[in-house]
Length: 604
Image 1: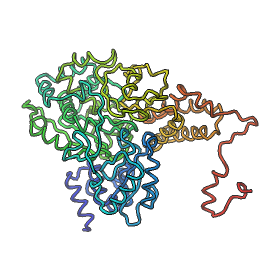
Image 2: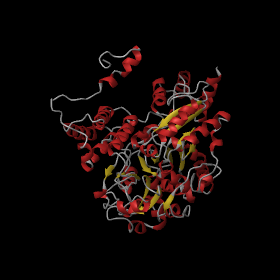
Image 3: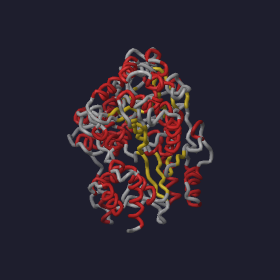
Image 4: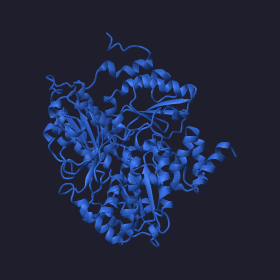
């Protein structure tokens, strides 16, 4: 038996050779060996009793995993639109020059790999990067060069943390330079919390009464779609199945979103308590927090909080001395795949598979994790659940707007003086939000992340709520000097990269939309392109399999609606009927490089 085989067998054995724990296995192998090699895949497949192709499919799906060796240290520089606005291209150039490699490459000694990341949840302190699991923020080109010099002297990324952030970022289990940037504390999520109070009140009631309270509070899921939480729980409880499950979606991955990061850092107790209440309400014994790979630096801290709750009798057997109520929570790490924020893709990942979305129906409430009835709510929703049981449904329902009870956490970034997290009541206008954030000269605002809508000043008096401007939490501000079409192009680039590729409308449609927007930006578009974009975007939206493809056309659709003059200024009707769709000299560039000679047609 080789050393590699023995190590992998030990890793598999540690999780009971359980096929559904494939994500944990491949992450452990990647961390130890810098890759999950073909030989390793064979051993894993044999140990957990699954076809090799399933393990290979997992390794090839997630950006943090690789069959080819990566460096002992992997630098992942965030390259989303906010980081670009804050100068990440200069940082990228400094990293590349100092390391002597391009992005996507590893230094010749195999020590350091350099990559881009689509979003690492640090838009309020951009430019930022992950160095293995260590977060470095507020980067500059000088800071990038200093980081490389330090890593060459000592490859331990923990030594890059020169100062600690506020709150629990300084906790011994976190030790991060991340700042919380909490700007406004509301009464629901960010207020002080008496751990166990809501749970004790819940177990004194019947499960049906708990669900009734959630429905009375008019709590809607905080992910953006706003499905009534109590109704979802009721469906799950009534569905047939021997085992039920509670899954927490902690995979916020859209550029500009970072509110869950703050909750996980400062109020994990509140979230865990909400999950436990859900377990009691639907009759589940197992809860899983799906934690995005970019937040791995919080895992040890979260595990400690869970262990404390077990010792306090708030998890485990006979929770709160309620005979027969057994419930515990484990953390499932993601590995860099935005689509896993979609609930069925998240379930697939928790089952140890590729993060492919599933067809619906059946819905997770009927047939979810391991085919059992499953509740999937996000971090903020579970926090609201705890407060509702602690303070009462009436207390919760009296705040907010008519159709949207309670408060909403907003993560605000971009061209504003006070980026950070704000807890505000539903019904607040976008203009009031911008005033709080110091964004008085905003020209465009992306509400709800790239999958939301881009609005201009005429919409600033609209309300943040499910019935008007709905948002999962992200607010990105763009000043008058920004090009909204460049913003659209960046968002489409993000969706092209993050599409799982399963269905043609999403896989192909996003590429076609991006190409056409790039043509228009380059001045090679004509008026008919706007109708083409509208029709194509509506087709992708209507025909895609999951939420990613159903919302990825929104940057095109909302800018065609709200910023149409920006498109019209760039398109023109060609007089002779011919359309300049490409530049010949650029189109033959690759061929010239391969052949080693110039084209006679472009250099006459």
